[in-house]
Image (cartoon, rainbow, N blue to C red):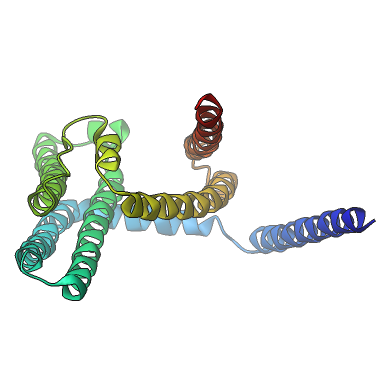
Length: 262
């Protein structure tokens, strides 16, 4: 009886939440239908035109800003690494925490900066736009592309240098950064505490990304509905959603199977 009651409560809660989300969707749809949301498309187009005019300066800014932020972070990381070699236990734990924070900040900034550079570059990254350019404008676009590629190369080398600095401090971490199985090699060289931290962080990331992807899928569908943005965004988010689910489920089944075989 208790189990049945719990199931009834679960179904009831699920139904209430479904109705609540449907109500929110209805309110959003009503507001969009009675307000000129399509006018936002014109605003986006205006913003896109402005970005195209200043795209060279924007890409140069991302490249310079990445260097000005990345180099001091890497220098500070190396300084803490040298101090760690002479530190006692408690001081060593604090230094390791600071190094972890610097590494996380540097990696996050490099990825965010590179993604933003891609987003801004995409405003002028279409064949229709390229074919409409004159010869001088073509040269200008090539310079913009060169800055973008240089920025990607710098961020890639920054991450390689970051890994190399970790390996100088912890020689057991001898994973090859150029190898396709670099992450697997890195994990094999971690101790149990480090692996547990990685597993917990990865699981939390998986839960958060799963929620984010579902929201992005709905947002992509709404954008296509009102601004005719195309179905490619919906397809791409859908592929990521499916891949995330399949890889996680496969990993769980594989892990369970490996326990049965031992």
